[in-house]
Length: 420
Image 1: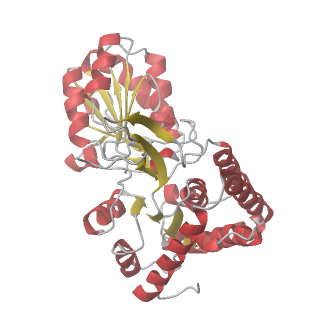
Image 2: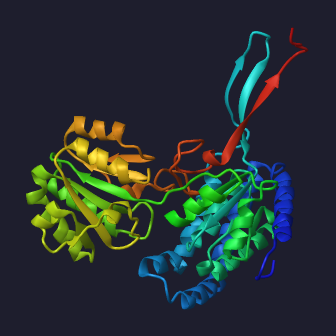
Image 3: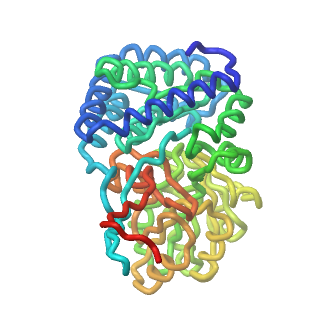
């Protein structure tokens, strides 16, 4: 499909093609789908020069993006290899389709089973992360779903190059390449039209910042799985070990600050704040992190920028972290639950009861004791690539792998029963 303005009729045509591809996907064996994934992975590596050239076009146009978003946009040969390896890992995962979760006999003698089936056609609207094109295609294809992708304008040339490579690999295998489609128009109008494509899309998944996610959640007529902006917290309890608190806080903030599982806030107990906060602040400052503190935090580390009310709800995606001092774990939990995005939260403590209370009372998809929030990731959880981190409570929550891209249907075996 040529780049340029796209109207609803063209989107409907894409939807029709996706539905046709979905029908063919349902007839493919797990081995055929795995072979396709391996071929797509090999094609990414083989065409890495073309993908990198397209990425350079996008980077040349990224003059008004902050450094953290440029990092998300940038591809290297290693990152392309990682994308390909992710596809190969997905190919090695167990087939989720056709498995029967449970089976039982009712009073009429019917054997009733609950079987895993694909969702159908999945629409994904995402921002400047071109790896989503490959990751989402792999997971959707493995789970028997066709996918319609609509990325942001910042990565359009890269996304076109990646999707063309994947579609070409499918075509060479005699598989319907419309199992993977990319919407080339990146306008808001087209995104809105896609959100209303109820006849063809079975579910819509947004991936990006809070603004994009909320726009999709509030606008879409297609059912939405809400994925997470990440206003993630590290809570340093009064029973925390200092070096562990330093290591985890620095890792969670600095290792890759542009991603949704990076920590944005540090909450620390007043019983250890005088001793611990200067050490943690110095370690963060050494990594270029700007700290924004409440009055109590700034009284301990005066170099902090004053935090505003808006800071507690902000997802920075940058080397910025806000700091709050609290007098109890209950206060920490209340603050986190009031301001978090239900993504990933962590407590650093050597106190078993405090850790368990935090686990049970924090409202989030992933809650950690003594570990970095950066582990909220499909690869780290053993799912292969992920489609996103769901922060809602219906259908799926946390890193979404193959299982979360399926639904169920009941299969019933009888031998002539009629209901009386």
